[in-house]
Length: 167
Image 1 (cartoon, rainbow, N blue to C red):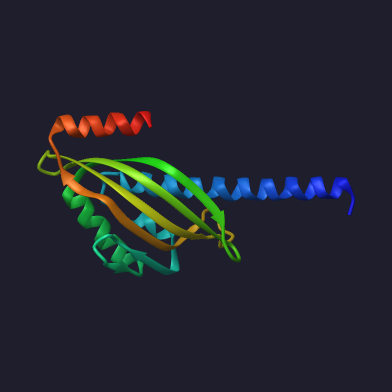
Image 2: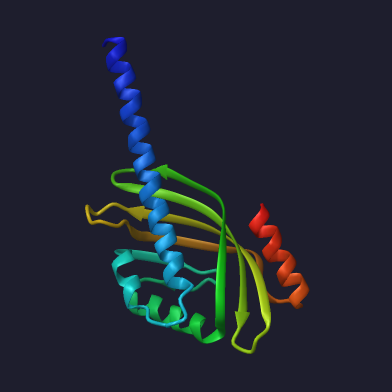
C-alpha cells in the first residue's frame, strides 16, 4: 500500500463519516420541524419511521408503529400550543450495517394549551437506518427526561430559553 492509497483511504473515511453525520442531522431537523408544527398532522412522520420501530418514551411506553406514534403525537399537540427544541451535544456514530447511532440532548421550552410556560431537558439515543431512500428511518428511539416537563413562571422559562440560545 502506498502513501497515496493511505491518504485516499483516510479521505474516503472522513467523507463517509461527514456524509453520515449530515444525513443524521437532516433527519433530526426534519423530525423537530414536524414535532414543532401546530397542525397536529402526524402523517408526514410515517416516512421517517422504520418498519421495526421501537420508540421508548420517558414514561416507559413503547411505540412500535405509525398509528401508535400518531396517537402520541396527537396527545402532545393537544397539550402543547408551542414547542421549541434547542439541540445540545449532538453526536453521530456509524453503527453496524447501514445504521447510525445518534445521541443528543434537548433543552425544551413550550407553552401549554392553557398558556402556561413549560421547560424540560431530555436525552435521546436513536438508531437511524439507511434504507437507500432520500432520508434515513428511525429504528430505535429512547428518551430520558433529565429535567421533566414542568410548568414554570414566565421569567424562569425566559431564562431557560436565553441560556439555551447562548450555550
